[in-house]
Amino acid sequence: MHFQGSVPIGAPREKVWDFLTDPHTVSQCAPGLESVEIITPDKKFRAVVSAGFGSVKVTFTLDVEWLELDAPQRARMKAHGSAPGSATDITSEMILHEAPNGATDLKWTADIVVLGTIASLAARLMGSVTQELVGTFFNCVKSKIEA
Image (cartoon, rainbow, N blue to C red; front, side, top):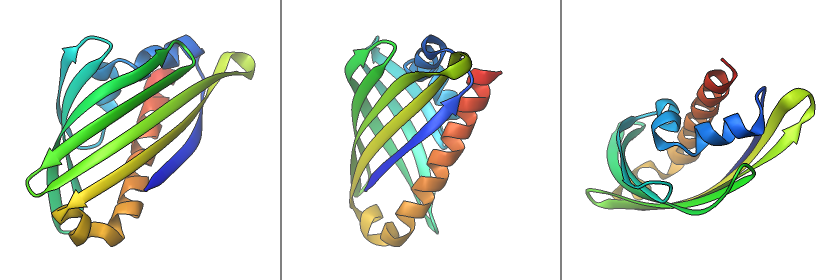
């Protein structure tokens, strides 16, 4: 599945960058996040995340690695997650552009592959549930950064 979007944030690019690249701050907005652990600062972290797709609930352990950190304009990451009988691979990128009046335009993409039991049981719900989770995440990010 491929997702992309753009989010205007009423804050300077450096503030947006600092929030989004710090696993502890950005995790405040991650729906279903149970824990986050820094493995290697500015390189790797591990997160435990639960998600529900209809009557199916799954908890993934995600190993996340920053592939590129070009402050304060571009970041790329990859994640591999596993859950009993299922797995996921995610690649994501964000690009921050300066906008008028000291604001920032955040453009993002995410490619998500889900395999195993969760993919077969919840395939028809994944797109809409993922869109809802993404919306919740970015609404939270925007409100926390702009506060």
